Length: 119
Image (tube, rainbow, N blue to C red):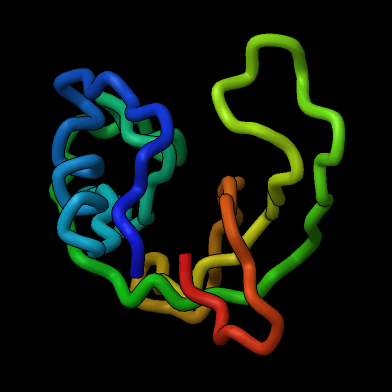
């Protein structure tokens, strides 16, 4: 895998653990101790129950592709050159101990045919 040379995010206190895990090629999501929901995007309170007891947990990164689009003509001043792929992925991360899932938008900068999908 070649070294990424594109733009990098500026972490905030809420997002720093997510980006540090991404640097290690791991996917960590916030998990609400009060209601059991996984939370993405990182934030200070759970959107389901408004609880503030969020902890970070490593998840598999596996999911089901819901939909995608290939952007051939990007927005002005967008930091990545076209073409690139934007996708909605339904995470395989369990929520509250059940098989329910949550959807997340991801930006995929390169896709090869027949690659297994991992976020």
